[in-house]
Image 1 (cartoon, rainbow, N blue to C red):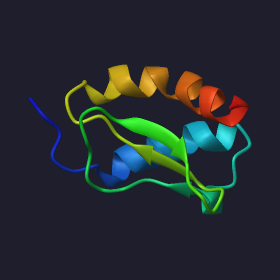
Image 2 (tube, one colour):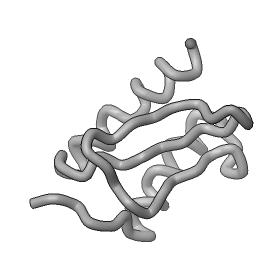
Image 3 (cartoon, rainbow, N blue to C red):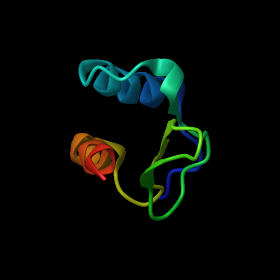
Length: 75
């Protein structure tokens, strides 16, 4: 079952993870529309864009998010 919109609860869980990584919430953008595949990337303005994957179960995807963020930050 595909995810059609990112919920407030899901956004809160993503922000909890970015908080734990020391990333200021003002530097994180989470679009409300998930995509397939989801992606984490650094925007030209320096902000981190986190697009939730529409096809993976949210908890499975969230389990990979820290690694995705670290990979983008290292690039």
